Structure formats: structure tokens, C-alpha cells
Length: 209
Picture 1 (tube, rainbow, N blue to C red):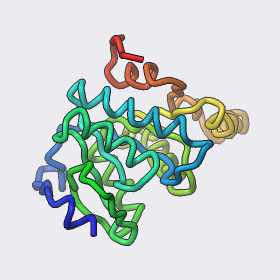
Picture 2 (cartoon, rainbow, N blue to C red):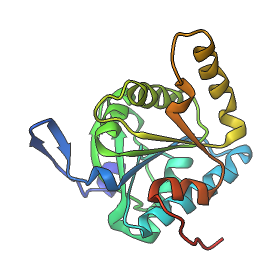
Picture 3 (cartoon, helix red, strand yellow):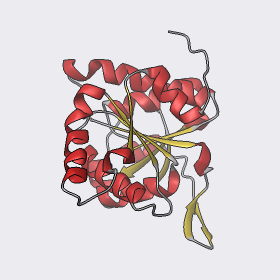
């Protein structure tokens, strides 16, 4: 199983605020999205590889759920740039066996909800590609945390303006119904590799196309 392949376990240490991963949160990015590899998802899988590769070269840690699709592409991109910058948090029941080592295993948890909450502590930035119900759960948890200014809460960067637009319509309906204020401002939108990387790095950098 994957546990035997990826055996670099990074332990957690106790701190004043509880369990704190041994990664610098300000320099850590969680890349989330579909585990399915379909023709419709091909462009996003390629983009996930490129974004993770760019960010690892800029000194950022890249963390995923250790699965296939978007997650695999992100881990491969970070690993190819710097193996010390590619990480994953596995859900025990969903362990995927990759043919080659592409990440360092941070830890294993029992449920997807636990993994999502752990991402809040690990990563300041969440880059969320199109995905399924699991990605929706991550979007909701991260967005709620950001909206209510919980600590810690991630900077939410959603990829794919056409795919994500219905969510923003829903959030604007919240505003119109006066059940939330500026709910759509909880998330940022990005549609290209350059947009995504620059939102994380915070300045314009020249990327090879």
C-alpha cells in the first residue's frame, strides 16, 4: 500500500494552540480538486501540475489529499520542482497506491472532514480546482471559516470562472436575501496559471508558458 511507499512521516508537535504541523503555514498551499481524470478535466489537471511546480520553485510547500486527478498532478508538479515541497494528508479508507513516490506523507486521518480541518491549520492558501462532493465540502468549510474570520482560516482561490460561477450566483443570492453580507467576497476567482500563482506569491513573476 501507499503507506509503505511514502514513509517519510512528518510528526506534529504540541504548541500553545494545540497540534501544529511542522510546516510554515504562511508558505504552505493546499491544492484541492477532483480525483477523477476525464477529458473535461484534462486542462485543470495540467494547470494543477504547472501551478504546484511554480509554487514549489518559489519555496512554497504543496499539500494535497494524496489521491489521483488534480491531487496527483499537484504532487507530481511540486515533487518535480523539489521533492521536499510535496506533501499529502491521507484519509485511511481512501488510500491510493501510486506507482512512484510523489509526496511525503504528513499524516493519516479517519475521515474527509478531519482532513479538511487539518488543511486549515496546515495551509494559508487553498487553491480549489473543479471537483465533486468532497471538493464542495472543502469549499464550504474553508469558506465558512473565512467568512466568519475564524482562526486559522485560509485564503480561498477558486479556479475556473465558468465552472465556479453558479457558486458566486448562490452567494450573491445570500446577499440579496440579507442572510449574509458580501458572501461572494469570501472567495477569489482565477482562470489561469499566472493568476493563481500571483495571488499566492503576491507579486508579478515571469512564468515560462
